[in-house]
Image 1 (cartoon, rainbow, N blue to C red):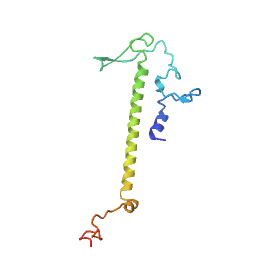
Image 2 (cartoon, rainbow, N blue to C red):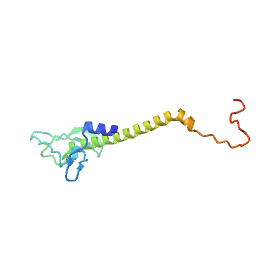
Image 3 (spheres, one colour):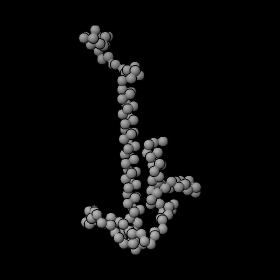
Image 4 (tube, rainbow, N blue to C red):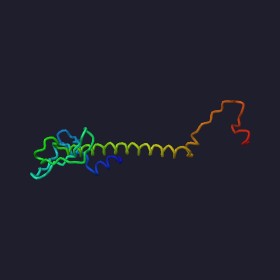
Length: 140
């Protein structure tokens, strides 16, 4: 089991509900799965609280003060923000898993580089049939 699967399982980013008819697991982000998770009922006095922005990406430091039940402009903004965060976490875990795999391959290559097995399997080809001693003149 890879590091990625362990980390994703511990935090439960995916829905993972088993469907016996299709014999598959639901692999949607848990936050966005409409089939297997319910949105909590919103109390009447709860405020929207969505961070307000100007020019699309520039935060103003203010928040929407409209009742959550009446605010249609920021409908489900918390769920979408959580999905963005979870998706970024998945991307980071995949990158981390890829880097661990590269590190493992490098360590394997380094341990195999100067081992006895590599020396014994190494073949030296004698290109000059007259010379029988392959050592340099300095080593003789």
